[in-house]
Image (cartoon, rainbow, N blue to C red; front, side):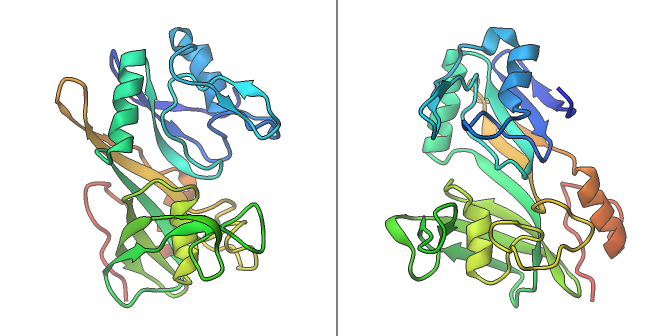
Length: 253
């Protein structure tokens, strides 16, 4: 396993890891890896048969040991992995009932007039490209409700730094909603392919930074994933300095 994966939290029921960008959570029948699921089986072999398999687009069935949610390949950050069947079904119910609070951070192109906002736009398939989703006029197929809340933590010449809370869990939701309001995520190859990469990013500038939920014993868990080096590099370029996941970044004129 070439990419380093850091364990953020580990107990009898759940392990939380900080997934690096460039890694898929599980095989899709096309990508050659590396995959987070391979690392899970290698490091936690007892989890191999926990959870439910998935059928890929090529028709093959692959195991997803303990996986109850996912991140896009380029998105870095927190992934929860269930270690037992009981915790798998428990976490699955939390996600289904929106009882897990997820926080992301992202650099996006452009700016926002208001410091806080909510994007409430249903998401369907793009009419122009089958690989894309859309929250704009012309989206086709079944439209699914999608809500994203955001807070502007920093405004700069060409970009804004956001803290984002997706209240629903649609595929590509944050990326699609940011494009819909004309502030796509920096260096997003699908939703901002013609924009110049900024701040040294070579991948979609999106990080799953925080997850809060109650575990099976009713204890509140607050799990944080430190920012990767490319985010820290962007902070240095913008003169933000150290960023504490428990605090906000002051706006910079």
